[in-house]
Length: 114
Length: 114
Image 1: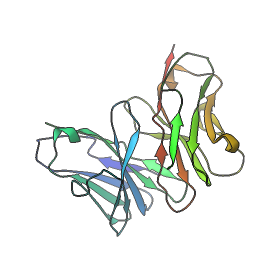
Image 2: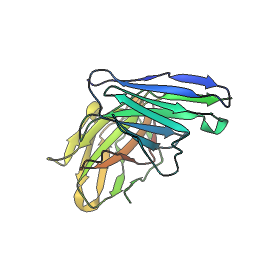
Image 3: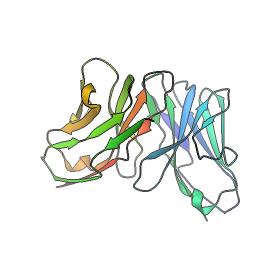
Image 4: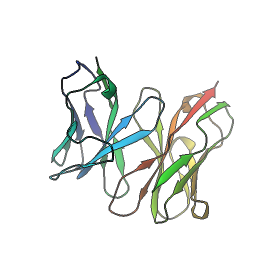
């Protein structure tokens, strides 16, 4: 079946530094990828929709300059958390769309900013 | 605006009990409906999905869900739960058009006691 690989699974960084998270579709091409943030005991919050070859579409309230998304190829999207602060600590999840009805999720990245 | 409501936030059952988790959505158009499961420490996995055809959908691990259009509902059921079903369950909806954005419910935490 379709697999989405997300790296790293865990990262700890110092406040003020930037962190890049990669999301790869391993055996299919994903023209659209989604980036989510999940708070403890809560549902997924969609941050942005990443479209290959074009700018990402950010949800209301999500700072595009802070959460940089690049979708340069049909199999790779990256999320860079710039100038990270402790409040950015969270679980970040990507998913790739396989047409109208299919979504495959990455295993998530636990970001801790100290 | 589209929204998804899951009625039960926490459910505790004994093994062999029957399970029904409620999910209602608000959207007037044609929808695709999903149930995802997140086992402790693991990533999201698709349980089942509906996009057309028979409104009674059978998924993995003995789960099923019924789409009742008139009630805007897509409740998840399992006749007899097992301890291994302990997990978070999320209902999600997307419109059937070109926008593949998933709208998520807040999730239901299911604990099955052996």
